[in-house]
Structures are given as C-alpha cells and as structure tokens.
Image 1 (cartoon, helix red, strand yellow):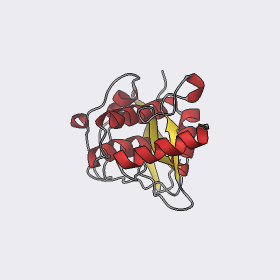
Image 2 (cartoon, one colour):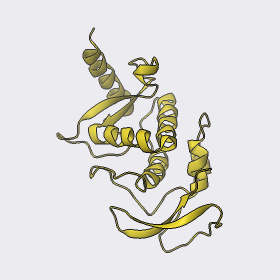
Image 3 (cartoon, one colour):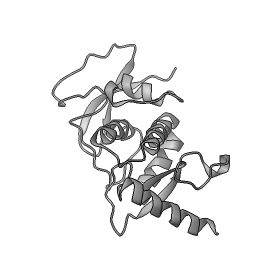
Length: 182
C-alpha cells in the first residue's frame, strides 16, 4: 500500500475516533482540508499510525512547522498535547482546547499564525504553565491550568523573568513579556 493511501486510511480512522475536528482548533473548510501530522517524524522512524498521528488542517500543519523552525519548545508542547489526546481515544474536550489556545497565544508572539486560527485572548496560560508544558517528557493535566480572565487584569512578573517588549500582534498592539533565553 502506498504512503498516500495509508495516510488516507489512517486519517479516516482518526476522524471516526476523534471526530472531524482539527486538533489545534483551526477552521476546517474546502481550502483548509485535513492533513496527517507525524508526532514522531517519519525521518526519525515515525510510522503512519493512529497512535503517532494528529489530525490537523493544512494551515494548522503549516503553522506547526513554522513553530518547529522558530521555537522548538512550542512545537514540543503541542506534540505533548497531541500524545495525551491520542491516549484518551476520545474527541478533544474544551479543557484540551484551552491548553492548545494557551500555547497558540504564545506562538502568536513568535510567528504570524494563519487566518484560520481563532485565538481566544480571554483565557490562556501563564508563562510558567507553558514552560511546564514545554519541558520535554512532562505530561500535562488540565488541573494545572491558570486562566487569565481578561486583559485588564495585570499579573506581576519579576524583571529578571523577561524584558518588556512591544510587538505587533494580529489582534492588536499590546505590551507583553518575552522570557529571556538562558
């Protein structure tokens, strides 16, 4: 069986198990169809299986590859969430999408996300929680989420944690803290 047919077969099985939803929450339409994402890359021996895959739309997959190029930690964080969802063998929940949204809010500071991505700035993860997800090999649980109710509430971040920078976000201009790389 060719790889293309195998991918189509596995994508069909995954849609049956997890529902026809992009695992990064991107809108699905004719111009943004499903793709198969290898959690363990094929170049590293990853097979085309349900357990090694994630259902992503074309633009979600594109944005994920951009994250891999520009911030490997964010890429690993999303792959960790994909692995956890795969183990459940159930459709993604609201809690799962809140964790994904938190990572995507941080990614939006590093890369320009596709217009198919819908971010909800009313909830997100604190930087420390994203750092916890990013640590390779660590598992996430929705019990550790910290939600930020609105943009008006300020959270004190020590000066040594990061530098205050102004960046243009596709949603609006705002000041954010970017962690220093050590």
